[in-house]
Amino acid sequence: MPSVVGLLEQHELAARRRVDGLREEADRIQAELATAEQEWLEWTIARERVGAVLSAPGGDSVDAVVAERPGGAGAEAEVQASPPVAAKAKSQVPVWREGLAVSALSADYQRILAALADRVRLGQGPLTCQEMVSAFGMDVVPARVEALRPKAKRLVARGWLAEPAPGRYTLARDVSGSDGGS
Image (cartoon, rainbow, N blue to C red; front, side, top):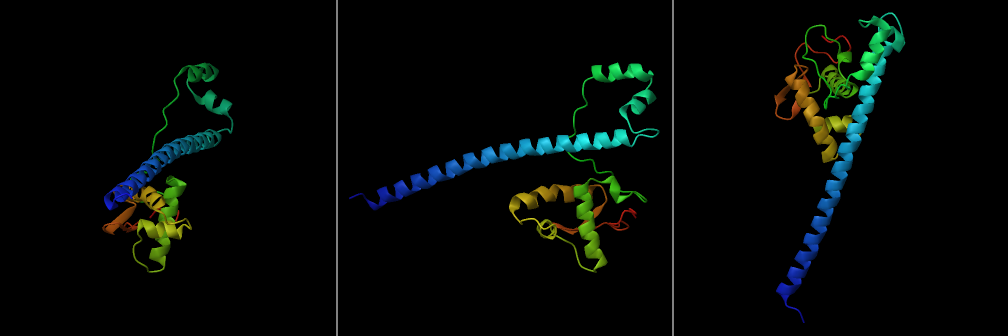
């Protein structure tokens, strides 16, 4: 008959193996998530670039944009020869200023501002990231909450939001969540 200490060591070893296996699986999932996020970012950038090309003044085709470049049609070969521009890892958040529209922000940031504008409109206080995730109708899990936190912090740093208490966010003074910007 094995000793109590021996049984405890067996259980400890089994638990350690389970923890190691789960950590390996978590690392694999984290790597897969990073790859998926990068792919999503690349598609978002592609959509934004296509939108910029199609909304170019004086036309809605690539030919119109190429014709506007110095050198006219010859610039097309120049564009193909130049290396592609590296994608930026994060969405750009401009510094807030009077008259800057909320539409200058990406959809995720607009969503945060809209949720906080609703709170202000209803006379309610600041929101935590956990409360924002819940307000967006998503599962309140640490991964989603922690994915939202840097976005809120970035909005605070750029003057769109205020953080009156650690981890609690509201619209900055003079900012409205409407498309008016101020």
